[in-house]
Image 1 (cartoon, rainbow, N blue to C red):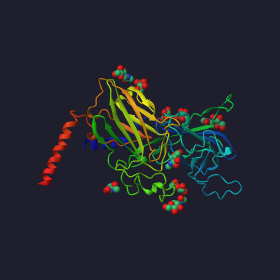
Image 2: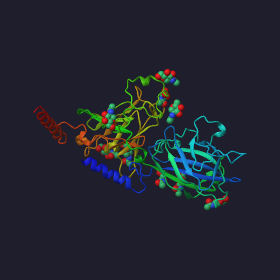
Image 3: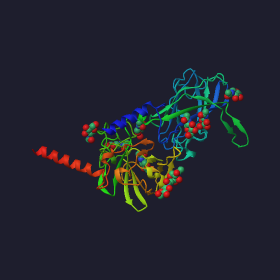
Image 4: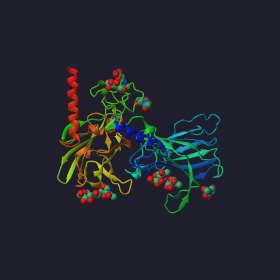
Length: 434
Ligand SMILES: *[C@@H]1O[C@H](CO)[C@@H](O)[C@H](O)[C@H]1NC(C)=O
Ligand SMILES: *[C@@H]1O[C@H](CO)[C@@H](O)[C@H](O)[C@H]1NC(C)=O
Ligand SMILES: *[C@@H]1O[C@H](CO)[C@@H](O)[C@H](O)[C@H]1NC(C)=O
Ligand SMILES: *[C@@H]1O[C@H](CO)[C@@H](O)[C@H](O)[C@H]1NC(C)=O
Ligand SMILES: *[C@@H]1O[C@H](CO)[C@@H](O)[C@H](O)[C@H]1NC(C)=O
Ligand SMILES: *[C@@H]1O[C@H](CO)[C@@H](O)[C@H](O)[C@H]1NC(C)=O
Ligand SMILES: *[C@@H]1O[C@H](CO)[C@@H](O)[C@H](O)[C@H]1NC(C)=O
Ligand SMILES: *[C@@H]1O[C@H](CO)[C@@H](O)[C@H](O)[C@H]1NC(C)=O
Ligand SMILES: *[C@@H]1O[C@H](CO)[C@@H](O)[C@H](O)[C@H]1NC(C)=O
């Protein structure tokens, strides 16, 4: 009851906070698309378009980003290097030289790795995969070059495109209007001279999980050394609408090669579970030492159609300010507000466990974390040892309701609950038998 009330308050705050998308764990997180006009042509311009993923822990996974916009006038795309338009549109009025795309609202995607050399450009050709800034800033940028026609050939006649859209690869991003900003300054390729874009505009896009999907895409289960009860993921945590299309672990369909299914959407084929989540994060309080305690974290993939490469796991817990050692994962504290250091990001080690493999025997990853106790705040009571928030790949995971957490035997919190359950069960049995 109380939880539901809190949930509605949270929902209310999220829906009515200024620009819709605001993540308290990544308050300045955004994707900026920068459009630099580098030279004029006989009927338009050549521009370099750069996508910066300034999000701390949310990346663009396969099949990658799609950037769309609506032209202000009758512009066309003559050519693109390092990317391609999704559709050409109707270019029939051009006879000699056929444009690359004549759509009024074009959409552009990255080229795949290994694209022909003469079609490449700068930071391109990664299949639209872009790392999160907090994980690898050097891989958090994507770029292409576009030659635009019928746009005007001076910064007085060029009109800014409208209504930018960004898929990453699914929905969830909302882009603001493009804004003219001071021209970008570049070094020439030989590094000797400075040049400057003729005109630069920026578009800022932000992510909202509520716009991306109605249900969470991961859930959390909990256990501890001090109680044998394992708290599972909430039932239908990720929605049960598709529970008729899931497959059992021993199903024959799994022996078929990938692609030989009748499903139209290849991106998801879930193993049947009571939570129906593609990903589960398990937090186990493993050992209690005098000055330290140890947690085991396991991530399990239930999707037979997806390998999660360069995955990220963000956890909020008050003791993360005192992480002593993290085994087999990388760890980085995220300090969004100067004073609060209770959030951190786990991710895989390059070429070792940076891919969470498809569901099956290899579809899980594990780590252990050693934390130093602050004797003033540390306790096993009232579920303190469990995480406050968990995000997998930038989407918040559903936690079990607090009253189901494994409790400390004889603790003031656990026992009355246990006894009230016992008593109500007895009353129920009594009434039933009666
Ligand atoms: C986008 O992120 C960058 C880097 O964190 C930040 O400097 C910039 O202010 C952000 N832009 C907006 C509009 O929030
Ligand atoms: C435009 O984007 C670039 C690249 O992210 C950034 O350096 C610049 O500060 C932005 N300008 C404004 C006014 O936001
Ligand atoms: C307008 O264009 C000229 C050259 O075409 C350039 O030098 C100038 O910086 C531009 N003005 C602005 C405000 O970008
Ligand atoms: C599927 O979900 C519905 C509720 O949405 C539930 O009634 C039904 O029992 C579920 N079926 C299975 C096989 O879990
Ligand atoms: C798909 O599986 C069916 C049997 O279920 C088989 O007859 C067919 O040849 C397979 N197709 C491919 C492309 O493997
Ligand atoms: C699903 O896979 C098949 C074969 O690999 C492919 O032809 C089809 O385009 C894919 N569909 C989607 C929606 O990706
Ligand atoms: C996941 O990666 C493995 C190894 O690279 C590959 O064999 C498998 O086909 C991939 N699965 C999917 C669903 O892409
Ligand atoms: C935050 O916590 C991490 C991990 O324990 C620690 O390495 C870092 O020094 C802390 N940073 C601050 C500003 O307290
Ligand atoms: C970590 O815990 C020790 C012991 O309680 C304490 O002295 C130290 O200040 C803590 N470090 C941080 C960053 O809170």
